[in-house]
Image (cartoon, rainbow, N blue to C red; front, side, top):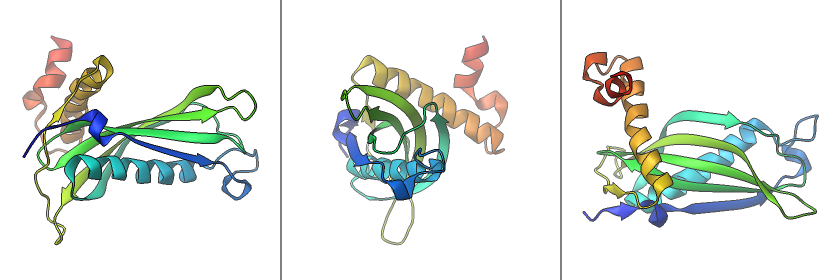
Length: 169
């Protein structure tokens, strides 16, 4: 199994915010954005693993800026780290001003996907090799996030979370 880069999983989803997708303030519903991010992230995870993928967790979502009606929304998703059968996908959400064309980062999210076979059983995925400085930062942070998640779920003893312990030493 050959390793892959984050760039090879890059997925950009571009869409327009329509009236039926907005709340009473004429901003995109959060749930609509979550669904769009899930689709973009699943394509990214599938590109990395070349397998069927299922959403395992929505690890983090930050709604930092409202996405107004009529905006062009771009979701950029890339696998940030691959584990044995799971992949963390990091997404940056951009909005494009209708008049100026300027792009502003509006939101970000981190989802985890698991690659499965046709029977729904987890399968191994290729290793990810980060290339850029940002990819390396996200790659390193992914292990800390995974260990924290396992500790909180009671699946890892805090003493075994070496990456978390290293933050406090």
